[in-house]
Image (cartoon, rainbow, N blue to C red; front, side, top):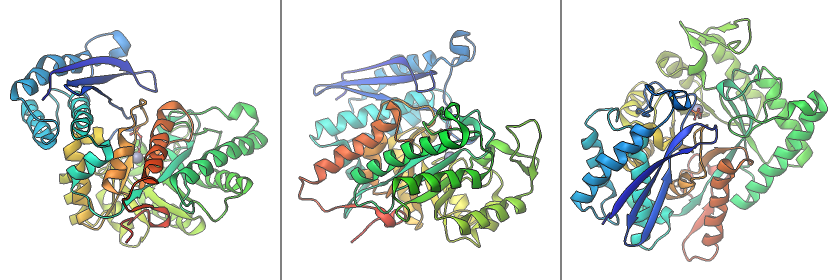
Length: 436
Ligand code: PGA
Ligand code: ZN
């Protein structure tokens, strides 16, 4: 049972406040830290911030801290939940206690911190690694799958100060044999990219942005993808990687148009049809693994139209916000074929697992994600392995809060080498990794 629940304000990787939660049981103290997005979807669960207070520009989370310590904690302790067997009950109880459809009263950040800390306490009580505990929660069977890490190499959008509208360009080592090799490839490509950027734009262009990727003075997808191809060639991995693009296009959709000049002084408006033409050409010209949020969160029509002619993985992030109700609508509308999973979009571990299971039941793939505002919490690495999703993105192979997740994957991989269980690296099967 839970003996004590404590919370505190700490900083995330952007230097903004976030919440950390400690759950104490007879096994010890179990901590979770909650991430925070910048290009947040408008249908996400509510992140509670102290807007009425001047501290941290109104971004403090002291209300959420007090909700954990004064409301959620005492209520959980009184109920005497067993963390080992009652994760779902704990999560459902917190949703009920909140009483709103979007966790707007207690805050999804407050609730998620407790949910994640309880899962860690549960794993300790069950004497198993977190990924094993979560795998049982998800009732996941078969091969244990180590995911392909999708490394964010170039940052744009609201994550950087350059003029590229498109938020993320990633490199996925699908041709690696293991996570460990994939991490090595990611690191070598990242350093090669730094050299390529230095040669082309000078050393002043090698500063990094929110997710650890570089943000050189580029504007178009072709400029970015050509830099990546050059870096991959220098590192000697041509043919062994795929690229991925997250335009995060909700950020620049206005009145039926996409303004890909939104970071410059001159608007550059594109119709949805023009965006479709651009993406179609890019998908034909480069080895692209997936496109995430190519269209805006409520531009259903464009999603559906593009998807009807596209066999590539199309991932809904802001579109779906890890919410089963949005996934159902997207399925009815045939809008996409994959769900991005961000635990803080929905606010409890159990609901995130349910959403992933539901998406898989539709034969969709699931892509697990960090947020642009992160901490060194590595929960999503275990969650990715638990759900056998085959792919995960946690930013660049650089910066502590990003490498925490990749290092945890390598740690799990090292454990897998000594275990009797059937393990596999997803590799080219990242979309449908339940390799037999
Ligand atoms: P965010 O970005 O965390 O700022 O929302 C990540 C993403 O859009 O995938
Ligand atoms: Zn996204």
